Length: 95
Image (cartoon, rainbow, N blue to C red; front, side, top):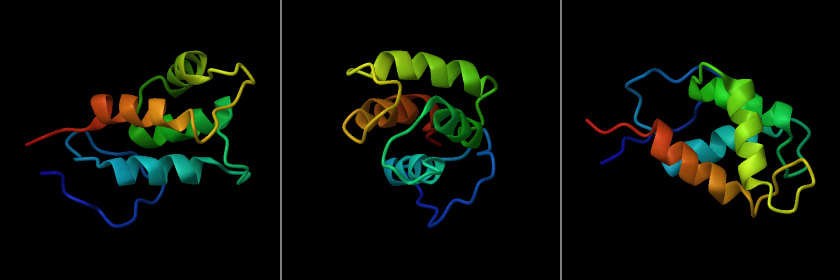
C-alpha cells in the first residue's frame, strides 16, 4: 500500500520513495508556474526534475510529443492523465 506524504516541496524524490497518484498530480500542478492549467515543455522539465529524472529535458520532449494529442505544444488537463499514468508506472516503487 502506498504511503502518503502530505505535501511535497520542490525537492528531488529519492530512489526508494513511494509515490501516489495524488503526489504526482501535486508535482504537476506546482510545475504549472503560470497557473494556466496547461504544462509547457519547460514546466514539464521542471516536473521531471522533481521526479528525479536524469534527463528531464529529454523526457519532457518525449512525453509532450506522445501526450499532446491536439499538437498545440502544451499539455491540457485532459492530456495530463497520460503523464500521470506514465509517472505512476515509472516512479512508483513498492516495498
